[in-house]
Length: 425
Image 1: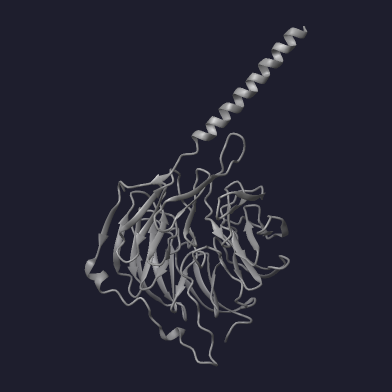
Image 2: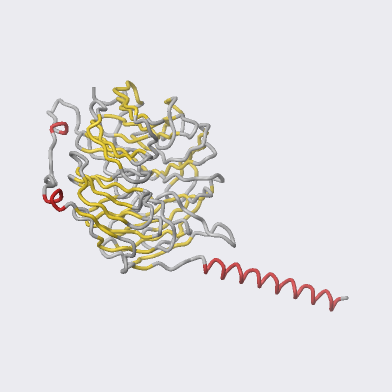
């Protein structure tokens, strides 16, 4: 009997070892190695050379941003999804206070899944069914619109006189900001959900076939393309000399901004047999990268090495990019809870239940953090303790953006301007 027992135990040990080996090799096979794409299969470029040659000068000073010493402060540009290349989704130094009087409302007659961008007195917003609209920020009047061939679930990026727009039709298009005329259009061969960002004349954007593109902003020509070998729905973040992206294959990748050379790739495991997947974009405080897996796992990594510094599990489905301000990140999930975590170690500062599923990222303005739920409600919470101090019976997707003068909320198909109680009259 003892001999039989030893044989059975040995067989169980062998089975466990075989299972562990199979899991290890299975995970290893699911970690594709990316690399530069020099073939650019399916990529084509249209240029309106006449329109490009007639572009407006890069530096303009519109009348709306010129102020007298006693006048209201100028409104800084919110040029891309997240407000800056690091996608922090925050203006912690702007103290508008609780939203007060609504100044105007414009019905857009379609969903705005992503918030608008803003510069020089004009808001630019993508509507879900392929329409990009320019709106005067002072009164909500439509200035122009441009119809794309596919869905536009993204925020347009501003670069001087150009507006860069991605589309599920597989295109990245540069429009003239003054009138919406097409300057160039790049076809990637796959849907593009990623919101572009422009730094020093280079457009960075991801395609759903896994390629991260760097494009010349003025001409649309491809400077380099890195194939991650995983689906990309996220938007790339630019952190110093690095461009970082997340993928559905569980990878967080940073490449060199100038050449696309891979610097590091980190795969995040869900369990012994599966990898995580990421819809949320990476955001950064310059030292660390923060993102959220669809399972609700919050991940912090070193920008320099890609080493995982800490994780925090929200325990609910999540798609929202973390907002970052003053050493705190703000994340939420489908469980209706908003969480403030310390960026240094992931410890919880506070959590607040607001009721409803939260899909889109938060917006930080001064000492307030705003969120919207799929149940069409929006909330303003104190950053210090999470106490709810403002409610709006409109919501869904991202709450919007802000400047030194106003809040611009994009909820339930309406674009609205609000004055903050502490903001300029």
